[in-house]
Image (tube, rainbow, N blue to C red):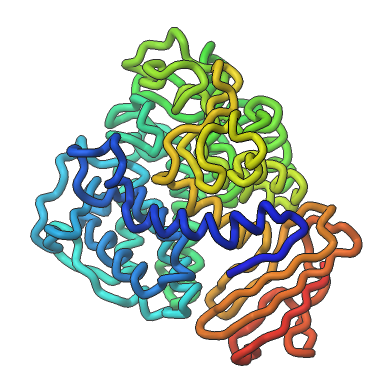
Length: 479
């Protein structure tokens, strides 16, 4: 997929360097990192499953093989092996991890990647494919997804949220086995919503009802126990200590649950707007959005290990790059193209071609984090290349900004762009067919398709059905 937009720096990143970054991250996972040298000799579960989002369109067959490998790294209780070793993995005969080794977010990422693969390829039968669990038994891919949901339902705390276990993506939060994570609660909400969509697709009404019942309960718990009057709490410790609350003197707000409240479909439009406005007010900087605020200086590292980092670095209130795409996606979902693009450019490497002395890393590759306002190195980025930022940046640019979204029945066109963009072009291959797409936006609309014309025929929705597609397709989109 290539773009031709009014922003040539965007095109340079999207057409060349981001795809290259995606392939390197996919190929190496985090194994080439000096941080993990000698410590991890396999594929980290959460990292690898997310990395595939950036390459499904370019190497779908190879990505499917790795996706199947990672699915067989799921244990029969629904949790996952933290690391899957491709050269030594023996599905059905692996030793299940000890209870204190599971991470609550690992299998939740399957709900982003598996449907994306099926929508890209049209391989609906993939949901019926039978694959073994890591330790024992086997199930369809659809069954694996249900088991992933059940794992977090089984490992939930007194507020009805998934337990943090050994980690919940933010490895610096010390939640313990019985502490609860609202971030993964929103991932679970997204998983249930996605499972309902798949159940409808496969005509499985009992599975749909099962998920809808759990979704209703979870939504009630989120509003009752996670809302902190202006934003969502980050977590609870088992003794009731709150993370990311107004009650906290440090790190009183965390970023992660806020965009996921929108992405998961939990919040309505008005709630989403107010929540993201507060994210902008409390966390936005010139170089991106901070992971928390204010930084941690006094909190015991036994509560939040982020204190071990200097202020404005890593999980201690830095601009953590991985999370930036989530906010871009959330802003696009509610139709604020100007804000989504503003955020996207703030962490886009090519935007710093003329400011190398500030960013201090290659202006064509994503990094793990950027030093934030509380750091004397404000704006400097660190740990480039091997970051989940790459796949999420590409995914959000392609599907939420440019709005080219593979779907089960065809190709959906739903851009959310800056109002200054009057026209842009996209070339895309989809299921063996070529598309040349021109988007016209003479009225400066940020979101909303007025009409689509494919090969001279006007459509009555923004979905191009597969049966309307030719080998080569000319598409006009009017905003």
